[in-house]
Image: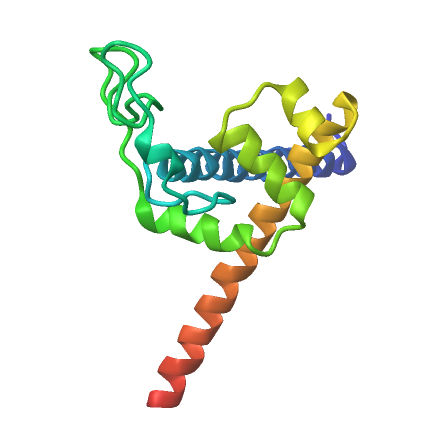
Length: 168
């Protein structure tokens, strides 16, 4: 015979596990959105934190079969049979606009990690932080992006509801 207190605890555990699953799914969505944003930046649509000079356009081909810019071809898949992932331009633009509101060190850590794909020791050197601090910095930056996106979606929804109600 189980007590009512035991069944309440079991229900609370189910609710907690459901909430945790929802949080994990949301964070996986944020990670996928950041990867999409990085592909968008690397594809030439958006290049954060770079100047618009002509220097990169006049390099010679250093490796046979390389592109004229010498950067490699971002439009081909590294594995011949693997299709390229589609880029969601609107989601990438939303992440790009969100990046403007992050503190500089958090923004730079995301750019160096996702867009430039630098090794961790080089990111630590660039940001002048200790290696043990990098994981926390990236986690905080991802959480800031998630919070800003959630806030932005709520405010857009509230604004559109107010607009629809005022037009009636």
